Length: 77
Image 1 (tube, rainbow, N blue to C red):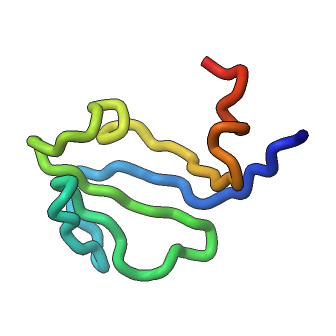
Image 2 (image 1 turned 120 degrees about the vertical axis):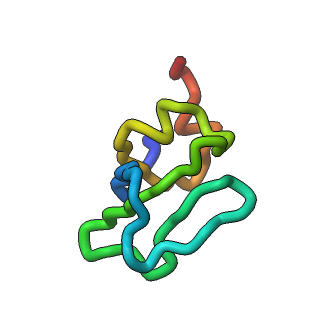
């Protein structure tokens, strides 16, 4: 069976808060509170003691949605 990947957002880390962000207490980060932009851009600002891996806090990423994560990960490293 073929996995359907649906674009969700492009996450871009920043060191300065962006208008419309709210603090996520569970992760030590600031995230957008409003709906996604027409292109799905999400600016993310992480505290220095945020528990997310440095790669996540410093490198932009593209996120997709799938119906079955186990199926989407099958055979991948």
